[in-house]
Length: 388
Image (tube, rainbow, N blue to C red; front, top):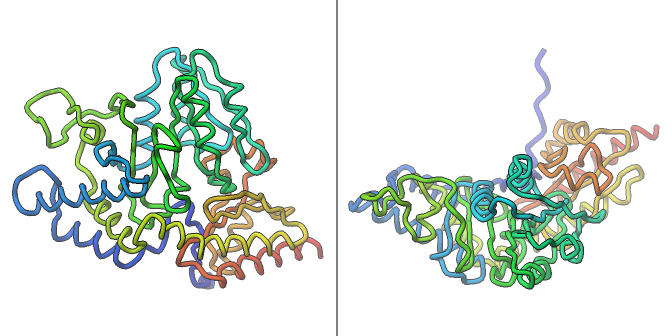
């Protein structure tokens, strides 16, 4: 016996990766793959030169997004996770102390924990409150003479709470340390003036920026020089076994994803400017998240884990149901696709009092009020079923 078809798809997992992409992004991606189809900068023929221009244009997109920083200080690793690993492993040394936070993502906590387990660094994880907020004074109190880095997720991917990165940066600078900022949830939702927020910023293109997978940003201010994590061909200085000194080339060994870079350039053209990207998210995503949050809070048996200030994320629980059960019910009953569980951020759940994780809905410019209504009505039905 065949199962009944699922309802039409309602994708509400934008915090993981944006979907759908604007048609212009897909067109640019396809053209780069089908018409250029070359290794950028690895030859002098026409398509190779054009492809190198695409990479330069993508680097300029990141420069504008970060408040006009020098594009020469921007490398484009394939993923933000790789960029964070480059920063973390490339900046810490034997015996260093590193401060992280309970609101951080595993993309920063796991590399640090890996080094700590091997005795290479000492690691302190400062707490957050029940909204996922980190008190900068906790960072100051945790500082030691050997502290080298503070690693911070700019916004929690569970609650959406934005951290006071500027205050934490000042603490680090006053003490001679560095701040590495994971901007995965704020690139495209919160204006980023890089020089005022961190010494190092890493962000992916595939989330709120509406670009494809395969392109991310690693920015380091002048004077911050991580050791390269990966060595290999760059298309430059190929007659030597030394990695190039230029920042981007030093951290871009291997063949870059040309189509992903082209998609990022097209995405910027779609959202017009960094400020416009944030405005569009607030005009649509934030409005939907607030409506979803308010209506869920009115349902008996539902707990909403409140965040503030950043990406349009709503995390919640339904009494007597595991998060995975709620997520499955949402898709089967209403076609709503959400994330459930720990969201690669288990530490924050110990502070939120959510030992099984949460259900997370997140909204972008292509979501609608119908998606919110589908979530609310399905969750209300689950809660009512328990009461009766």
